[in-house]
Length: 373
Ligand code: NAD
Image 1: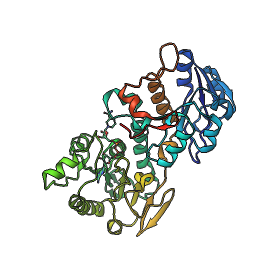
Image 2: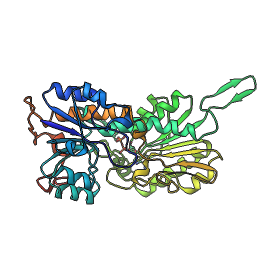
Image 3: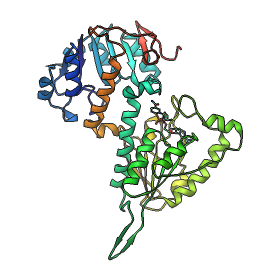
Image 4: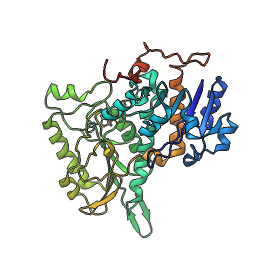
């Protein structure tokens, strides 16, 4: 089968969907791979490395002419026109964007959105949300250090002692847990909050302290357990208790990293303007949830703003800032997913009864399949 790897065209997207390592494996499995010239440049993968791995270089048109196309971001209108109907496309196709989903279905592509894969053990090696969120969590802490005029660890010097920085992490999923680990490695004291009770043990195993918001009813506890590992919107009363405890913690902390998301919904507001006002001047908030509206209403997407003496970082697409490693992990995720839709003879053989395939197949033959199960 011919596999196409175009250059990503979304502004600021530096990742690429196949690396020389995965190209080599596709070629070994009998596929031919056509990589658009310069597709990996921003991620430090050279055209020469792709040709050495067995790929052919070509134009965008050549890459889109392939039977199966590997993408990072959902194809834009122009890209859909270039590829035409009948193509199989793998990527982070953002099925929650209804308008875009409709456009992809109308274009007649068979679209696999890997971020829709279930969070089950068998899907771990193709879990693009985890591979990218993990890097985003790491980068969020480094961004915080960049905008912060103090150090993280306690330091005893001849000129006196500097106290360790207190960090609050809101949301202890994949990104939040990596942020806890990274902040701890830098010597910070870390506090974290999550709705899911199971997060407490994970936070503590990384040396973090859990901000325990008590459950006052069985209903609250049941909602907090979430569905399929994901959080659900919590009742207002619980959110108010969480806000009060968080505000106290944030007033003593200098760094707040927010990662809280609920699938298919705007991000919950967790850091109010009053909480920001109570933070010490020079504090930094990094709002990783900004692409879903943000956990703080003062965050501005794509910008670093200063409010009430606090710097609020709303930079987007953190995995793209680590394009080499993010592409390496993402490309391996795609390679792993391919095993579910291609047979040992290298022919397309979509296993439609497979739970992972079913969940990821969002459109086919002009029809939207997302959310139909
Ligand atoms: P996510 O990105 O959807 O959300 C980030 C975190 O925000 C979650 O932990 C969520 O509980 C939390 N959150 C939501 N509302 C909140 C609120 N009001 N206050 C505080 N926190 C709030 O989550 P994710 O990182 O994608 O992880 C989701 C789940 O999937 C986790 O349980 C994770 O351990 C699990 N997971 C399982 C697998 C697997 O088994 N294959 C792989 C990856 C992740």
